[in-house]
Image (cartoon, rainbow, N blue to C red; front, side, top):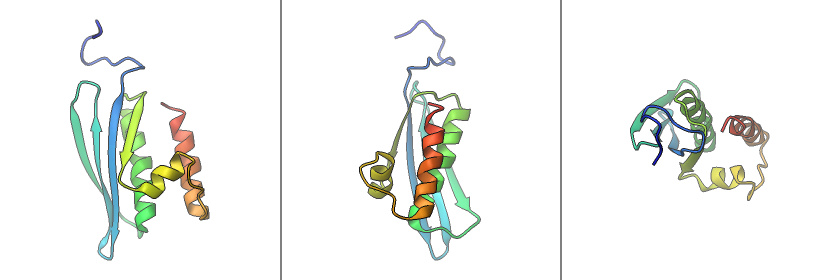
Length: 115
């Protein structure tokens, strides 16, 4: 417990991010839930205006949601995804073999410096 008012968050308070990207023949998009340190959920859906593979949709939603969380005030972010491939690549457990995936990883690494 801190003495700070609820609307202020310290640098150490953890925000949670849950993302799920998807791509089908009808299009691609994503679901996002950002949870503040006070437990308040903000839910979003995104429809992409471009064709994307399922992996690209997963990365696109992670990039977009990291930016959204930062804009909301997050400085310590724990992100969760059901994409094992993306999670393992971001954790550097798996190597990104495709150039586009390596570019996403580079962008995410740059975004991570904000947290």
